[in-house]
Image 1 (tube, rainbow, N blue to C red):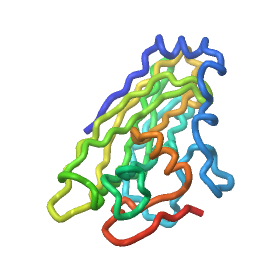
Image 2: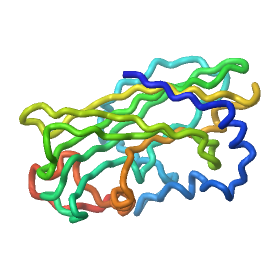
Image 3: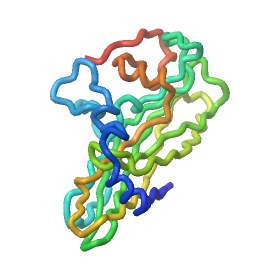
Length: 226
């Protein structure tokens, strides 16, 4: 299913008048991955050892650079732990954004149209109730390192097949960003993607501790990513 997010021109013009002190910068809003080196704050770590499981988008023509598109590290994973007890036997529904590809198109004074494709890997742990869960994720458009222009939430209903505790879903989205002038390029904007997580989930992600997406199917302890 393709969904469309349109940033209003009013939001774009209003954001241009905001002072940096009125909204956190992207660098402040994102957290550095523990133990990382040479990684930009908030970016999902690269997984060079895994073969890509997400189909690329068709390349389109653009008059300039495309917006930066990233997964927010603090919201890259969704792990339910009832009561806050960190244990593989205490896992409900889980999710991880496994892949993200994007492309854009714009010419002359046209709006920037960005296409994104997100791969979600979703799991069902021993404490999960029922056979399905409606996850939520969001896409945010920002002035690069400045104000948030728009943020839209999407529902992601998932039903697990009988006997299965894991599934993958791909979501396509189109983001339309108006341009203040013909000189405005995609490099002025940043697009972030993440799960709708609780503060406790964000802290768990930020700490570097993790369970696999199918946590709970075998005894395991959380590990810290190196």
